Image (cartoon, rainbow, N blue to C red):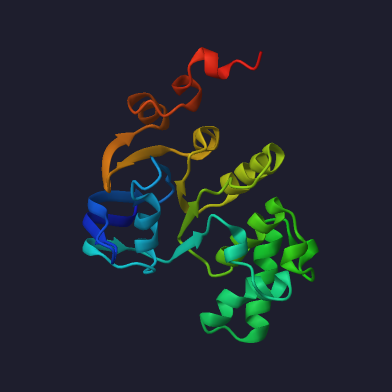
Length: 228
């Protein structure tokens, strides 16, 4: 099995002095889907932004292949007049000819079931449709690893189920930054837990949920759960 990401001792401090990463060790192998758990501010998003160079810290970071990042808010990725142009934007920046970029965009849209909206404006789409188009924009650049930052944000339950089925069909290794336990259970083959800028636990999804009491239903008292 090929190792796609190998991280050792990764550190990053923001300009305001916040130590966001404080010696992260992590690896991702081909075919894995790893959930990244942890409280807000624990370093998860800062970590994944290191993987494709949006942030640069200190330490050892070895990556084999291309990383594709799907942002938490799809509107942060969709900005062209039409869906097709939006998805073709990445390939164009990789040096593809206009015709080749459009062809790659059509193939990616077909892969996520969104070719039918190719000529629509992105802001006319539902949240679930926007998420799929944002994924298509990343797929059009032929990534080896897909990184999703809170992929179920703004999605209703049917859209979450559709997204889970889509991600299960994609062959790339995946990283899921998520608080959605059900989504992680459905997809992840392994989980890690971030705390104060470090990975403090690693194991199966169920092991990490249990070890760090990360199931929201168990964390709420019976009186708080009652709606009577």
